[in-house]
Length: 385
Ligand SMILES: NC(=O)C1=CN([C@@H]2O[C@H](COP(=O)(O)OP(=O)(O)OC[C@H]3O[C@@H](n4cnc5c(N)ncnc54)[C@H](OP(=O)(O)O)[C@@H]3O)[C@@H](O)[C@H]2O)[C@@H](O)CC1
Ligand SMILES: Nc1ncnc2c1ncn2[C@@H]1O[C@H](COP(=O)(O)OP(=O)(O)OP(=O)(O)O)[C@@H](O)[C@H]1O
Ligand SMILES: [Mg+2]
Image (cartoon, rainbow, N blue to C red):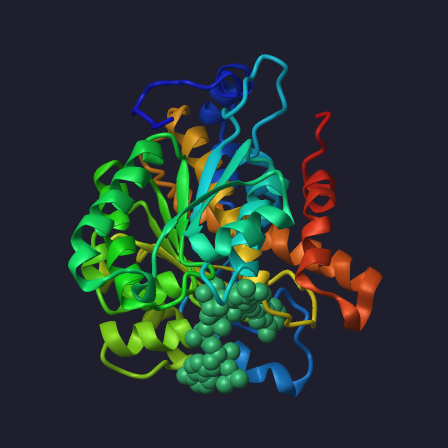
């Protein structure tokens, strides 16, 4: 299902938005709630929790540029579609993960199952043949396409034809997706990277929003043209991935004291993309302003939490896009659905991580966090509302 501007293809949009959205769009609270941001005073950059001197470096960098704390719960409430009996399968979202190779099968699984647990109807994984059986065995819920190939399995003289048939296979499905996530557990094989670059180019031509994470960020850091000027691209770098992006695009080192200006400059230099810089607080920008989500999650830093985030952001940004396309926005507001998706994904992951840690303490792993995605969303936005 692809989106056409002005069309309202979803039953949930019609019910939800026509009954509530129109009044809402006209109300003075619209700007307050859709901007959903409040300016942070330098002394409360972490939501007022910082009192110890060990937190001062964070306060300093937040103080160096304007950073807005998102009213993330309000964002989640607004963009999450109500459950409606009139809806049919697919209307709450169809997501695809491009990732999964010999080494990494967990990452694409975490991203794909998180998309389902947040509320998408269908979640696909496009991975290598080696990874496919393993990923299928984790969950019968996922639709797994064993189509990608790594260099070791392709002869030199076959490369062109294999590359074309991989692209043709993905193209068959592409138009149906509301969002794709490129990179969780993709690996860095050169042939695979070339094929995925072609898939990204096609997604862009088809106007499919694209979250770029993990090894997808390795790919685009070396081929920045793949996301340049693409307002439907979201990059979700962790600390190392961000460092590599800054070095490559801005030709300098990460500067913590100037974090918000540097993030803004990075978005502007790439042009139009939304970046969520993950860390103690998630900093989100589309080059216009910088928003943060600093709700405390968990002190456990087990691998895979970024994968939950990328799958969740894919769903929320699709929901935000549908929501905004179906609402008349006052001219003076320009809300970026990609930014709203990042804000919502960040909050949900952090809330789920907090609940999982409360239960499992030091033994908390990513699977435990995924189990709490549902409760976290229910706490903010009850299914029966
Ligand atoms: N269960 C699974 O299947 C999972 C699979 N995953 C998948 O793995 C793939 C790679 O993702 P990634 O996040 O591990 O890769 P990347 O950011 O390169 O860091 C790798 C390590 O290198 C190091 N390091 C790197 N740069 C550094 C620097 N400048 N300065 C210092 N150290 C630096 C650092 O380790 P350290 O040196 O601290 O031991 C860092 O931890 C990707 O496809 C992803 O999706 C994950 O999602 C997790 C769950
Ligand atoms: N120091 C921290 N304190 C609190 N939360 C953090 C911290 N570092 C990261 N996070 C949160 O954990 C989530 C995942 O970020 P992380 O940096 O672990 O991603 P990642 O390295 O890509 O993960 P993955 O292992 O899935 O690849 C983000 O929501 C981020 O905000
Ligand atoms: Mg990652």
